Image 1: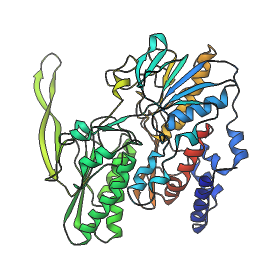
Image 2: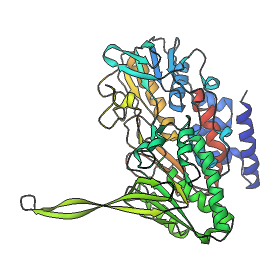
Image 3: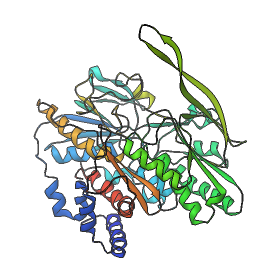
Image 4: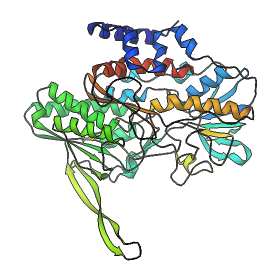
Length: 488
């Protein structure tokens, strides 16, 4: 019997589809997303997720009990005849639907729609240690928790996610670091009533909606206001989110009839809107149509909360000296500080692996856990795997990426337990349902080829209402009750 929350979501979906004269089955057929068969019903789900039970035994420890960690635990539980699985996770509400943050920040979801109790999604038989792993000794197959407990393992899976490094921004040092689903009170205390927001924390998304409403009200009163949106110089989870919140701010301003009084500008560190050329070109056209501005090669380095000024490092390349041997000019990086006043500032903070992992023998010079990008096996320790945001995998830092990764990780872990070759391969699949308006989404699917890889016979660069329905009504229950069952 399906969870009541899932039934309620599907009822809302069916009602919305009925208004459009579309059945749920037809909608999913259009979507063409194989794992969406979960939403069709139990028999189709079971038919599409038959697993071969393995009698091999080993002690498996998973560091991180969020979506990636718990989905992996569930699938291992389904796959192994005698599972011995321990999850190390300090947060009693670690399980969350993070893609819903943009919808919280625009008044469509509430925090309760995306936050869940970890115990409600812990597979039967899986042990949870409510603590943090702080020391790693992979040569001896053990780790130590903050409370001093030594935990041994045969196989280790690292799925601890990323930390939000607000302290790296001058003026926000006291905000420190935070997790998306963790306590954001210190960060929000530092932000105060400055108009600074960040959807990358659950409570931050709630505060963003409050700040957005104030911003819209100011514009509606006739005041000329400035909205500034940033994208940092580090890898980030959900790379489309910095633009999604900008699109949604634009939508709420239009809804209030106040768009003409607001200037909205995007400041990305990079030189494009999106790493896939086709999606980059589509986004540029969407920005132009909405009179939304952008300035490439700007990295946020400081915020004056009192004066409401954001400082950016504007960087670019210029020709340097001519090298006679190479017969080419050297390229020199130039920099200048740019101060930008704001009324509403959305910060996408720099992100990094937790220091206890990034600086450990399992980390790397860039902090992330170095793995083979296809097998997800650690490059040095064959009994260690990693997936999700913390894994050093190109581009794969979305929930859609994890949906592919956790199946590959489980297949390869079981193969390693059975002393067989690792044949499962992650192909870099990533999906970003880019919200462009209330009621419109561009479903950007791609992989390491950096080419669109649509799952359906429709132009993937077009904004569509059907993808809005999928984003708002389908993906959350599919994630929470499909992936976290180890089946979708």
